Length: 186
Image (cartoon, rainbow, N blue to C red; front, top):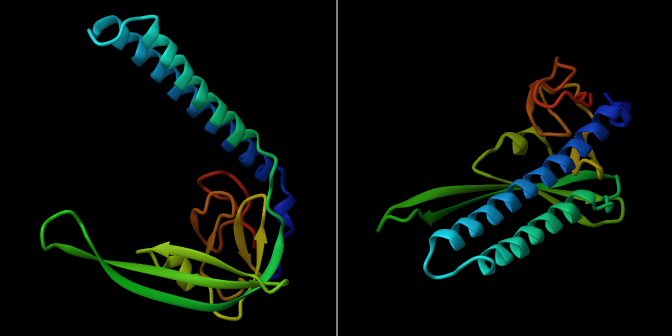
């Protein structure tokens, strides 16, 4: 099963646009919360009065809106490129979890991909080896820049597939992502 032509489906463009829109909406909600909170603080606090408090709230709120706008409307998209899995590494470390003398194991799974220009790219997951086990050394992959995700070239022996839009895990027999509605690239 070669790379899928379904990558050009309009559902991916709609998903990307919805993601941008939701990001801006989230920043707008944060801005409203900040402005309201500073207004309430100015009304009920002895430390700062309105209009000073609400002016600070507006400045911070505008910063949230600006960040949401810039992040959501950014036109910079990574290029699509092909590569090959050249190595896979596992590293186990321990980390302090906040209690004296108590440590937890942490597993870091890294997949190294060499693109056509010889650059090395990484897929890294912590404490979840599902993606690590999905790819094998020698697998051809395509990086889809507009989705910032990888598609494996040969999926003929796979039992699972990841949605390239939202990364939701599916059975290989499924055609549409249950989570976001985009077609699965197979």
